[in-house]
Length: 244
Image (tube, rainbow, N blue to C red; front, side):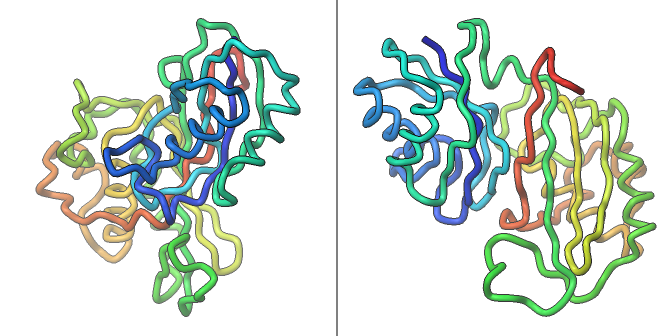
């Protein structure tokens, strides 16, 4: 039986989603919880990797087990065995055709910023800005990302992508008091793409290179800055048949 689970996690203490030789990944924690609940070893496949220090509000994963359990027991049982920094929000039984990674149609990331004095409670979960930026300018620059483009300028080395062409469906800023949120939705993301984009958007707001010009350059050397991982959240993943 194939289970689909939606998870939220604080990535601060993890080496990222994907299993590493030295352990300490979110994937390891979930696979261990699956083993304890079902008594079976099963590979848990996520919708995509999140790097060390990156968080998730709506990561999606699937795994196969021979034992069938009521879905409410899957959610509650896994949470009983998971560390408090990882929570299963929901569980569903799905067809074996479903693949959390390959079936994904679009993903949304959120980058969270806080304009003002650093607050200890927000350490490792937000990027602190010394002052509130020009929101209109940020949003105008963000809109230039929308469309199908070659995003080579915003791709760090080591990702292994076959192509740097991606389609961005939405890119926008929202403000809630001192909190500033950047949302970007695409059919896929390159290695460190969102963090590079955020760094360049903040730089453009201060008079740096125009985002459209950076896209045209298709050169990572023109966008070397990288926003820290602490402010990045995998917000949600959309699959075929869901509202898009």
